[in-house]
Length: 83
Image (cartoon, rainbow, N blue to C red):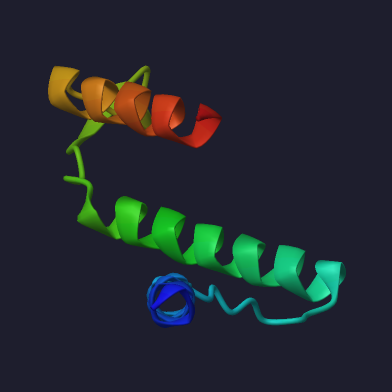
């Protein structure tokens, strides 16, 4: 009877094993991939921003300052990147 219970305990432990596969890759390749993903995210962020109208300053055309919403969004994005 004892052999039966030890077999069941062993089977239960074996059933609960969770494997987490990890891809073997060169650290430089991983870093390059991360940079490419970050560039992609930053491009999407730039494309998603509202373009402010240009404001004339002293005869030169200069971009108007960012709106309050944009500044808030930038601060949130900076905080996310820092984490």
